[in-house]
Amino acid sequence: MEANIDDSKAPLIEHLIELRQRLVWAVVALVIAFAVSFYFADEIFGLLVVPLTDAFPPGEGKLVFTKLYEAFFVEIKVAMFAAFFLAFPIISNQLWAFVAPGLYANEKKAFLPFLFATPLLFTAGAALAYYIVMPTAFRFFLGFEGEVGGLTQEALPAMGDYLDLVMRFILAFGVCFQLPVLLLLLNRAGLVTREQLIGLRRYMVVGAFVLAAILTPPDVVSQFLLGLPLIMLYEVSLAIMWFTERKRAKQQVAE
Image (cartoon, rainbow, N blue to C red):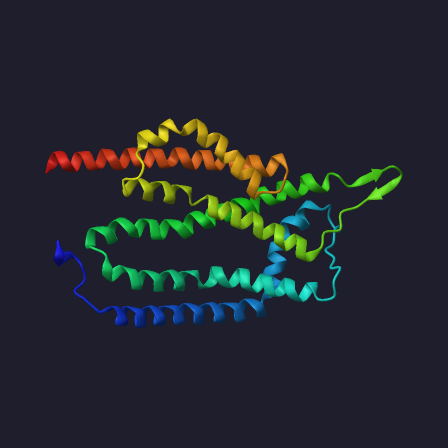
């Protein structure tokens, strides 16, 4: 088995030096990504505003800022938010380059699918939030505009509050879509079995909607649109475990 692991037997100080080098490259990538994102901050924020623009009637709606410095700090936050996504491939590559030499060949083969699945699932969750959940939720919120007690009730969202809401949606859906990765890693590590997860299904349904209520704004629409995909991802994880166990059993019989 020792032949499967990389030959490097570097002492602790060399590992620390390598770790520092990997961190430096990750920070450099993040700084460059931030500089590029800050230059295009207006365009990036314009993309993030599209769901709200579409929710308003054509030609109506506007964003306001109530503090003189708010618009500037919105651009800073937009740049930081975008920089993380731009730099993530390099950061993850540096992390993998540091960890991989200490893994056996079969461990690398088992871990690589999760490394590729993580950004794909995050992107899927973020896309669901951007294209479906946010437009639906914003139309629901804007439905409260109108006359109230003889006064006009009008939505005037602030730039900073809107950006915080958008980032909350994207991060909540992106992180929650990592559920299959988490469950499959726990299963592969032998910490949970498919039978145990099947027995916990009813609690998972309740937990999915509780988690959705915590992570999303306090409206039923957003909570439902996050809770339902979580339940579906849970079932998909169980199906993948079933196929994996079946494949493993066939290999054992063949051996």
